[in-house]
Image 1: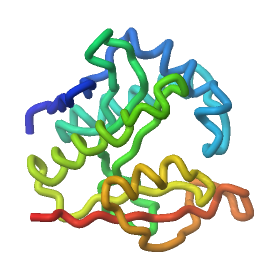
Image 2: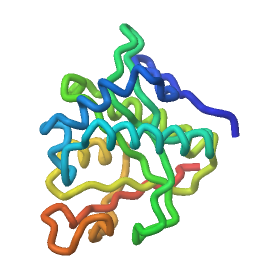
Image 3: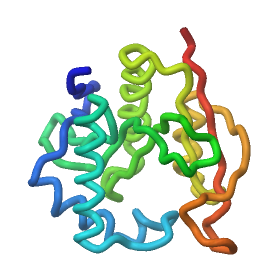
Length: 179
């Protein structure tokens, strides 16, 4: 499959570029952005995350894309779809996910870009279902999932977190292909 770069009315979902590394690292070091993640990320961890996303996109043609605003080409975070790791209790599956810089919150960007990502997943890739997950207290992400029409399916313990970790419990949401 060729590389896909969805565009919306206000946003470009695109391949990652070297210039994204600094603002992405700043985002991943922001306690507000990372509130529902186990830890802030170092620059090296952040760069490794970009490298993983680039590899996924090159393998499948789609993934967690860098997102920029069309009006000023400002990097605001990532949104997209990607294969979940094999250790997830609902694998194999494709998840939809997002992480935006705090200055981009409250503008509808996550929902707008996620809708474009769902369209790629269902219409171009032909997926039967897309999932998403978060910790129970992440009401902003849960609101996006619900705006997308996703339904809460089940609770699970995230295998990437140690037993008893306060963020180990996650909620799984599902959305079937409407076709």
